Image (cartoon, rainbow, N blue to C red; front, side, top):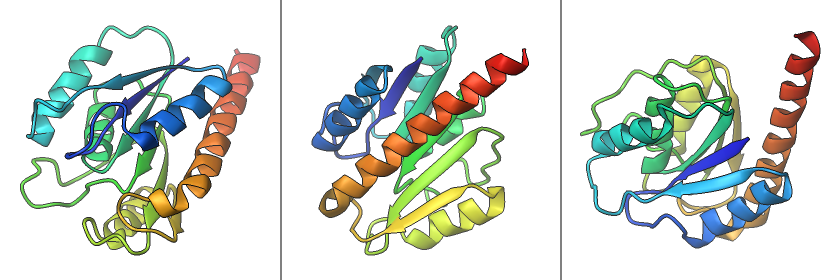
Length: 173
């Protein structure tokens, strides 16, 4: 199983948050990849890049996206076979982003900071309510750096739950 990370608009593929979460994924036995979008500002062109990378992926995989990378992961997931999606302060319902209606059947979990002044937490609340997924509103701003330990625990729990779901599925086959 593999975890694909998608970074935000002004960060890079191996920023401190992704490095920390990638380390946790590896501890859980996942291989990791972090896509570099630093040459693309348009979120929908980033979606196209991720889809092109994932279209031939035959193994199970998870998507993790932060901010614009959350939008990219969520929109791409409608066209690829992700097992689950972990979103950090996802850039949803923002002006200038082509996709504004998000439907998804994949297991999704969201973490958003109450003090986010870049993307209002209300956007994640609206999305989580609409699709009935788990939402963790925690102390912190858009970057979530002040609560990184909480984010790490939630991500670890998410990975553990994914492993249990896969085991349950394999038992039923």
